[in-house]
Image (tube, rainbow, N blue to C red):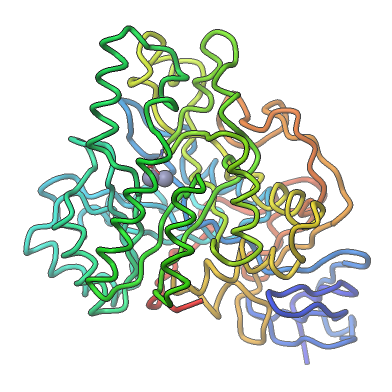
Length: 463
Ligand code: URP
Ligand code: ZN
Ligand code: ZN
């Protein structure tokens, strides 16, 4: 048997198993998994002794090159995917936003152009629906069949992205017919809008009022409504960027009743809390994203949710805006601060640190949360998200004991601050392979922008 590459002597970790093995790769796929493969039969071998070999990370929630809040997110598909590779992510799912009146296909074409010849890792798109006429409703089935098998709808941002309950219900019903998955931004946008107007009228304009005007109750209520609409439509639902216990309880309750309800959280909600908004001057703007940071006690609940499967996925909601000039758009009015934070690079290290080293869950559960469950839910499995014969050789070699201090001075995201500045993480990907080609080694990106491929996804699968 001939191999292009053999990854030798590592400890293979999948969502279910841990074992010592070599992995043989040919033509971008895993073609052998065995205790010992002959290195003479390979053009290249990678020594993974003492290391963990895991499937490449899958980040199902990113916003690259996205116009939002009067500006555009700072990472494009080149800088964002290179930063992702540094952190061990080999596939991402970004969002193609439908402008009102546009067809869903037009939205997809716009985002395909943004990624073309730039992406350094594999990518796919969810389609954000802002306007669901009969024509767009009809497009949903065709898009699902063509590999765009999930859609995001917003219950927040009135006048911009928010849609009403009837639209959500129609979209869920249609997705259910064809095996698609609806992702929900669950916050009660109408109520929040009233609270925001009151705050502004009282002269409350500092960044911290972004968080103080978006109560956890608004997220809990919208989550509950999204779950009820999905139940009525007979469709699965996936709650994005879940930030608080109020929403978590609703998802847990639905799952306990056997409903196909799923949710992700993000590292910012696991590691950062509301006190960050009290940073001096305008510093709090670095943490203006939606939903906002919560009181610290919610963090433990979220970690427990990850450990016990009330939450299934950790994504980043990477939506970077530079502090200078971009966040500063809202210097005198928190409603004008572009919403979003950078995180694509450090997801795996942060979750490994808090989850595995923190004693909250096993390395297998880690793989499930950052790779396998995202792959299954979003139709990428078994091509991606696992280590198996025939799967794409998207692999990371992770040093479980290597430490790193996160800093904007060393990160690769095109943004002038880090939400996790100074945080020490333990568990760092030291080698990353995309379809068998090494894209990160020796601390250097050695891949190529443009080598990332668009992935046509299958339909949603239960996890
Ligand atoms: O603040 C955020 N999360 N910005 C990105 C858009 C969204 O709602 O996911
Ligand atoms: Zn959102
Ligand atoms: Zn988002």
